[in-house]
Length: 268
Image 1: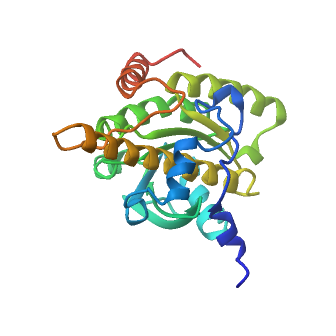
Image 2: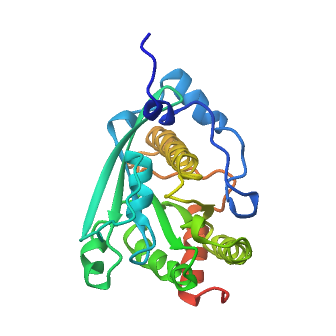
């Protein structure tokens, strides 16, 4: 059997990767849900391998969105990057619990003049990655508005939400601690999972994307199982509802997110 490359090993997932901190992780389970594992072992995963899950990466200009993606997808870091114009995307293929799972990672421009263009690409996203710069508290505060705008375009998919702090390597210890406390507080308001990373050093980048892919995969599987159940029990066409584990119902979750985004949450 041919030995796997490092990149292939990074995209081979057999156990649910651990969250960064329990203080801001809506999903506390340490293993894949039994229904997910049973579906994968029995082959009852529908056409998951044929689908392409969509992840959008959003946030202010210059916070490190492109650097984060390039570090994971290409294992490179370029300090003299050029600002993204409009949108760009990378395609990643994972093997999770022996199932093929495809992910598009959309890199969106942070400049105001590209917002209308980029917003059109938010639709039908399965995961939202909100990126902020640890050296710029305003970029953290602005993630609330970015999320509000993204949720307007993704109400039908109920995407997973991740709040990611970049440029950790540029922070002094005391400054990082203060910013992280603010970020964890905000992540809980958003019902998002929080991570801190450094695209320059690579710290937590692989771990984060493995976690994001695994959670998105699990929700795709549970959604497929729910669709199958609905088709068997209802004469109407199934809408592909998603079964949520250890979280509020989809309706309750959406109401909480919208109310917090619109109210602005607690100040930082």
